[in-house]
Image (tube, rainbow, N blue to C red; front, side):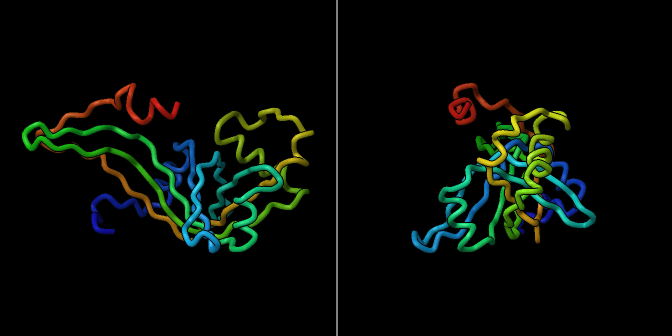
Length: 177
């Protein structure tokens, strides 16, 4: 990492970022297209001892699952706390943020463990015992990424001559809403 002063190597701080973000992007290998396939997903985080797992769900078939079956290796990225930072004197700007990137291997969760995986995913967005329709479970694929490496990064330290603005309501974030 070029900016080592912005790197987050502490596992607990990395996990805090994962827990604070609401979308995880995974990048899969697409050999037929010759380019990566990236998709934003809802996710859940689970820590088992020293292992970190990211849980996802989807329909029982589709391009993601086809690509995972061909090559289960994946990269992931999350980011949050976006703030526009403007330097008055220099007339330049940047963004404040916290992010985590990493890589790992995806595995399909067996049918008898799907409900547990869905509960981990739902816990990320709602209380632990969020009720969901059990009739949807057979139509759902649950998969998890075993994190093999990850690093965090932030840009939030104050510097002289800067001021911070909230992202505009008409900017990219508002258009996605």
